[in-house]
Length: 359
Image (cartoon, rainbow, N blue to C red; front, side):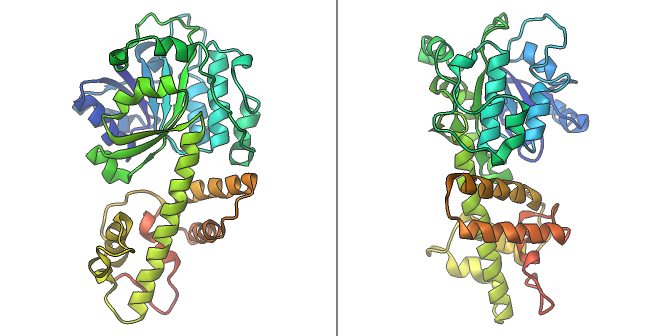
């Protein structure tokens, strides 16, 4: 299968390498071309614009910073679905968005893509399409059942034999065929991307999710179909709620240990096998007590996600006092100039003139 990939960053680059090792042809675009060219040595083909991917690829995967970046990449000038006056046939059938963006923005983007590529407004339900819905982003109220209906596209894909799910779509796919949009945020961090063990939380029509599942298997240990479009993003918000609160609690524990006169660096050993043990504990205590580790993500990414959690909590009337406290810590970190610091910088946010937990 011919694959397009937009966004070969810390997460995207190892995902692309796994796709190449699985035998797929991968065309890569990135706003900073050097990041894409670095993958050419592994066999990736570099393109100049996302629009080039539409005529070459069966599926295009996105791993971008935020909803604005997704919108620009798909609908902007020379974007994936920008016609640009070129009558050349469109080949792409699926857009798989691994970015972490608000569920409401996902639904708006998917609707817009459907309207551009063959589905009528009667086949969609949920919020109004277009830029106003996208701008609402995290502030737009979620709707029940807002998703691409399976009508037409799902029936057509379902009619194919199950064994053909991973086969390439024909190059002469009509430009009027509707795009299948799958929101598929991931968890597992850079280590999971490198090991090919990511967890994918998917939202979209069942037939579309099943069609791309063999692709995702190249770098994911598990793909869970959570429901309609936007459901994957909602699951990722739940993930980020747990992850950020846990890392903040670990930072507090490290600070308490250090100020109480015990070796905080030995907490992973002391707590191993107990209820407090976790991948996060084992990963982040060394980062908080020793330093010198390569960054695995910027704190501003957590702030973006927890701001979306807070907005979604407001929309749904969900009390989330712990997430609210984490949000305030992240805002404090940004004010301290730590937005680009590693995720472990929660420990730096908690420091006062009394001392530093980093040994």
